[in-house]
Length: 179
Image (cartoon, rainbow, N blue to C red; front, side, top):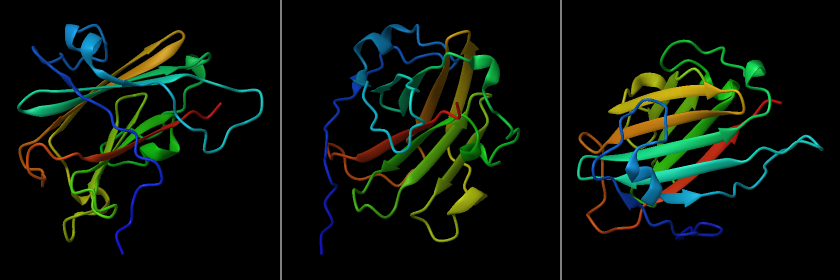
């Protein structure tokens, strides 16, 4: 049967004109008009802890841009053990993006970035490219501040399997905070 997402929350994407500089700072004008997600549902949480995560999304003709603003009271304790591309960034303090361009809930792109800017990416929709074999057209930059860490991600459309223009895509976001 046709599987529907549990709860679809549409997000209108901003227009990046001009596009942001991927430098780990969310100070480009386009971030002011970007689509924003300010509520993530807790999957697991240690009692007494809470951190705010804001996700910004904007686009131009060539790429999608994501900004992750991760509040963190103890950035000196961030875990970032993965040091090279396609290393186990999911075990670190990290943000994740799942992009389901076909909305089939089966074939998706996954991008994980740790606080050090190390990237894991995979394409689950092409035979043989699940896992670390796919290196997508992805550029990332991060910055660690005393009270937060920031990740900026650029995903170029060139080379992606894309649904026709005007279609709604599925996306999911996650953040791992190990404190």
